[in-house]
Length: 424
Image (cartoon, rainbow, N blue to C red; front, side, top):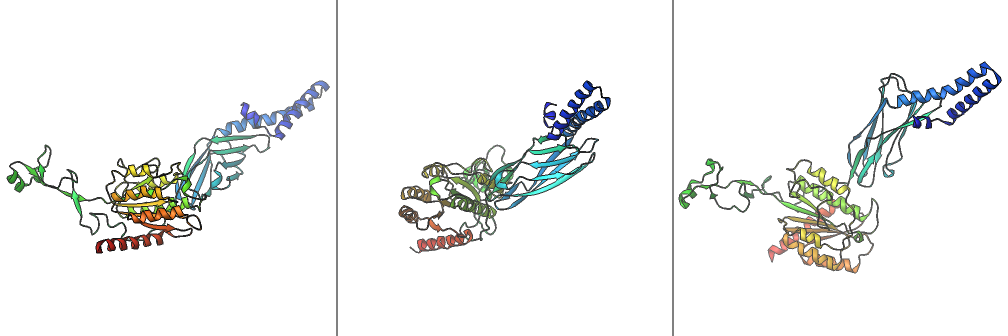
């Protein structure tokens, strides 16, 4: 009630003060008519406070997002729903939602009157050019009585989170990543149940299906042997994202770092759609901040919501204080092979040597080196030469370059290097 009386407007306080003064004067002067007027002026704002205080707790509000996850530079629709569950109609209402500055101006709606048991729905759109997680709310409702005596504000505690993920560009289906073995037309197979290293029939174990007994091997070895079975072999790809703060000049949605994040998301999603098991790795040796789709850190088409999990992790990735790639190299020690795609900023010769050693554990390596300056530094050129000398396919990314065109160039360069190696 103290907060309710604190909502008296200037008009309400004036009426209350004037009514009290009139009552005092009427008592001193013995004027009954003046007393009636004073009581009316003093009671009116008090009645408005009591009515609004009751109505405030009988008005409910909610919010819904459609969708709750959008790409950068895309819009999301926010719907607000207000319901009056009391038996009395409301007066003038002003609805206001708390929105971060990057999503646009704070939306405000004025509702003239909501009847008893009635509902009102309004909506607005938000858009962000910067990826991230943004909290919408709480929803604030300001109630005003018809006489303008009192204004009360109620905040609905629930808040919703809008996730703005990096933009994903469609990439052409080139042969750079190959086919996921065991899928489509590929006939490469690996062994199941007993692991990929079980290349010969093994001895019978308790619980094995008797229908898997390999009689020829049983007769040969003199003990029960079970045959091996086949399953599709998984093809792997690691997307390495350089997050070093000093490697990228500039900031903002058009910066080189944001291009690298968007490129990493596009390549990872493209490879996962082709059936590969993809993993996102940063220069600090950790996976994408926060979440992996599986216990082994790999995300693929066989894992539900794998793409969404990876994009949500990239939505909050930020610069790191690292100066090299030593931790990333250590994380690749148990790499099962496959393709390595790296998005790096300015890379010096000593950093390139660490990246060069990562090439030995992969079937192929492609590096997109972002050059945010008009003329590349000598150290960056030396680093690119080191990578190419170690067998990396290196493409220098200039401002305004399209990832789809660079992806085709990387495929052509990779095939040319493979043909030259086979010829030699």
